[in-house]
Length: 75
Image (cartoon, rainbow, N blue to C red; front, side, top):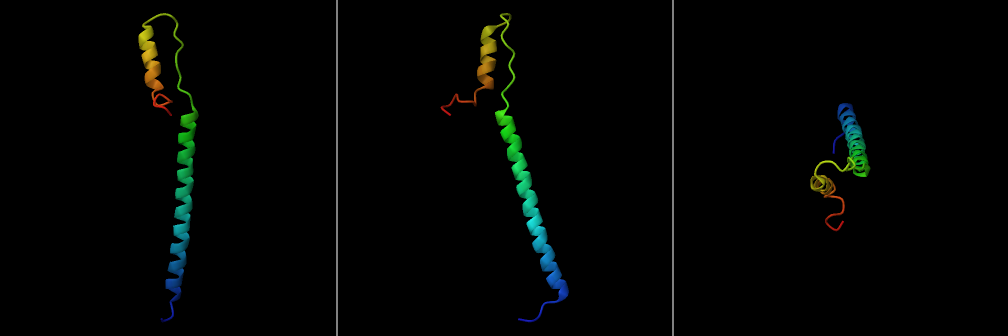
């Protein structure tokens, strides 16, 4: 195996550092995405309290539809 030029060594180092930085940035963005999703998951939906006016069946149907993914399927 022959000797490597200074340019080749520099290129290898630059590429290795860039790969590590890209990995760190990707991991940081991935973590931020999960934190944002987690915050949304923890945020309860907003509901208007039924005031006795209007259609109570529509009010309940809206509540059930909004909460459909929160335990309605045995979770």
